Length: 358
Image (tube, rainbow, N blue to C red; front, side, top):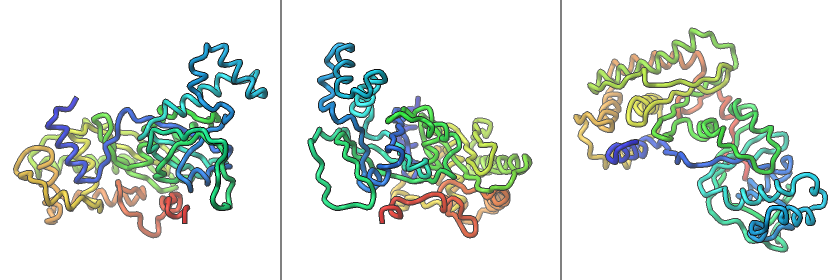
């Protein structure tokens, strides 16, 4: 558990470097779209919806004994009498009470060709209405379900570039599925660098489609971690690269994920990756930071490293060039690094919300 001073320093550094801090209690959900039928409607109109509209007030059913509740639901949905009146109730309760503002939802298009990622933005389930009045005709099927939640859509990813570990999730056919077991893969899809539960996750995207020799992977990982030694020398720090854990997808393309402590080498590694490869810092905040760079605190050390990098420190430049060489072999990108021509695989498989709504 971090001390208050450490937490304040972490928050300041993350603001400066534009690193999101994710609530460890955030939940994740896959919401079906009737085999993609309502994907565009959900996306364009910023919501998700659940059917079973014959059940107007779920609270009435929650007060019934279980046997009576199942019998009443079965009367409303005769076709489900022998199958899942209990599942209907559980899905509505989940949609109404378990899903919270800040939770992440995923919705698939037809055949899961595209997956949209969004954040629930309120705690309101729209009250039951007898009719929804659509103001304009649309070119896509309109959902008529009245039980709805507002969503801020963040990103759309084509299936071809979906994190391979999320494929199994897409096989779930329930109207709403708990996706918390896939939280790390969803988090790193939404942000290539983030802090969660006192750990920093730094993701390098490997985009080559060629077979990768083991020596290339080893050289790349070694060059990433060796910059910690340069950081220690310049700032007179002692962050241990042995504290950094690693996750990687043995197939390509795929992510290489470095994980370390938020108050130690993990955050340093993230800061170095951002500093070396074109990340945009919060300059307004940078101008107000009052840390003395001679201080041996983490924030002061990071600012000192950035200053040395901007003054073309030769040791930093040598390490950057070495890492750049190994990155190019893998066609790997650091967090927030701009994708450049001719390698635009990531861009071609990610679609901005603006692109799809215009």
